[in-house]
Image (cartoon, helix red, strand yellow):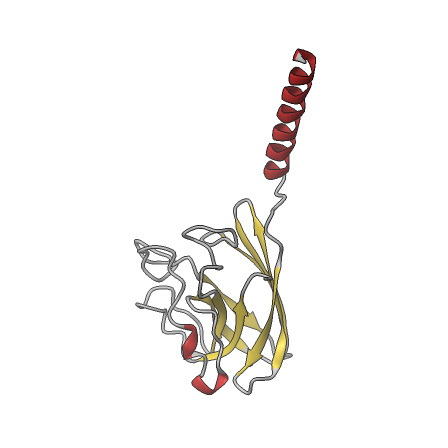
Length: 181
């Protein structure tokens, strides 16, 4: 009986150590989220994939049909993308706390603030960004709360300082972010 208890204790310790090593290596219990990006006409422009990492969320895009230029690129607070409302239904930036907007502002950035993205003359946006201000796992920085969230691409560049959203212009593309149910 004592030998069985010791064996169970050793097995439990080994499983705990394996779980800790898996966490250190970036294994995530949260599956990737794949979302369709739509334009103002409601048509699909491509995909965005979000993967939880130990330090944030890796955002990978494969989008075509965007206008050439610099574009604000943010997570917004509601998982609603209605083209007829010009994506205003996605709410403001996902703040994840009381932070100010902007990468260049004392007290910033919002959790949803990310660097501007450049789209070439071909209209393609293929990029990877690590956002350290959000997570897909449950908690206060989670993009997966009751309302979900949205990835929004703006018509112009974010100036990284104007409140509350960087003067990036209208919303031209949107993707609803929600975990598989």
